[in-house]
Image (cartoon, rainbow, N blue to C red):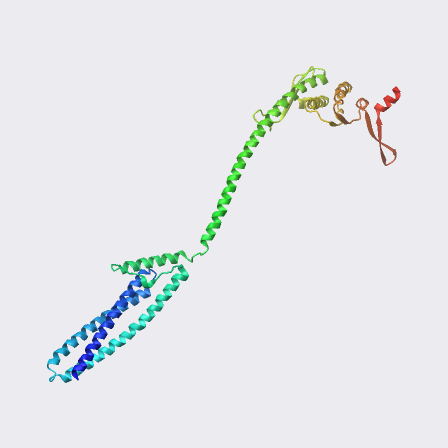
Length: 367
């Protein structure tokens, strides 16, 4: 009977040893799997340390059981003297076995909990980080420094939390902004080129306009001098640019010298002289740039009889190429007209337009 109990205890210890070895191998494999994932939490690390402590307790229990087994073998030699002692040791071994069985059950519960957390970790990697990994195939380096790894993990976790929530559409937004930036950059380059072309066109236009203005100004100046002498019966006149540097924005000063007077600005001349000077300038412009028609409003109002005669003589030369509408009250000016339009009031408060064609009347008298 003692032998059967010893065999039973030995088998039980062997099974416990094999079970312990299996649990130890499984625990080491799980620790390696956890270390490679790099996303394990501090809670799993604490649990791993607890498992390691339990492992040490199991090792101590196994050593104690082996010692009990050797003690039983020694007592077997003196079975007749130590049966009661062996029974006591057997009971103690049974008690230790029950304790180990309880611990084994605890390890199984922890293993189930670990598997659940491992699956949760795998699902979180897929859902949050879009990373699929096989934790079963993960390998943990034997020389891994867990303290340094934990410090790095905490630093990365703090950095990740400091970054805030992840913008899942950041890539699409970046692409849209990049396309917008490229479009605006192209538009800017087009605008810069268009601006350069516009500046070139403006410079060319200004250069051409300046040349045309100078050419026309010189012609008008020459014609103005001749027309002034014709209307005044002598003297001299000149057109001067106030700003030679910017001729397109420059004002023009008229210097006139009627016969018997010193050269002076047109503002210092009398009313009649200013009118004759203006008429000379107008007719000189007509010489250079003829116009189909011209309207004059009381231009001869300040002229005396002699100046009106000169004005009418010059006017007759220009009516050959242009039509003139003259508003005047001077009889001599009216006499050179072909058609006269007037306002009369035959009845009080009723105005009436009256027209007279002088050329037709002259033809009728000649006939």
